[in-house]
Image 1 (cartoon, rainbow, N blue to C red):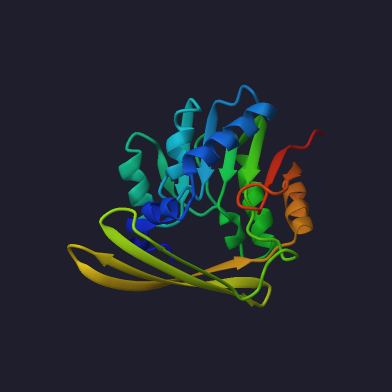
Image 2: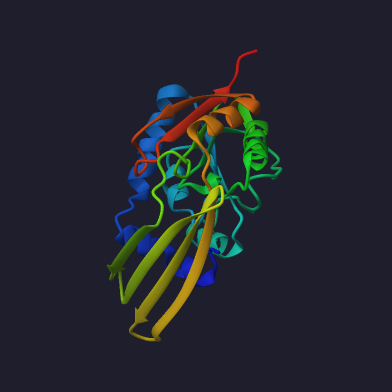
Length: 239
């Protein structure tokens, strides 16, 4: 999943579909500043191609990114050649500094396979957080709000290419599996197609809250933002 073919068109596709990375990053920055005005450093976990980081880099004194997919990370390195970017797993990574803000966006945290992995992920975040810092998490759809057998489709022409994307998401055990088919028509290379599959665990809102608290974090939930999935904001619990 998140292979080289997708990485090469990811930003053009999602921006053409209406995702405004800069606007989202500005909103998240304002949300962070309202709670931690002096926040100066940020780690984007699951940073993908670095599209959010590009804006964060102008709003925080120091930013870094962590991404599991090396193909996506290559795109991020081209976009942000002077930003520290790390290949690593959100469930178990070790960096040599702590951050005032740790963000994990676009439902990436839903790739945790079970509650144990979710707790390990949040514990890893907590270890990399400065005192008084803030964790910002955009969850995948909650088990109680997930729509089974959801179908989506778009055809966009962001540049010299026409890109068609169709997807079907179905429930599979305690999670969801999204099958996505891409068809790309390029003036120079002709027509190509490829498929990808993504699995997410369907945690409940209460399970996210419990996992954050198990990691020593006290969460707040903001509903109806980030395409309707909402946001968790969490700080270290006072002893």
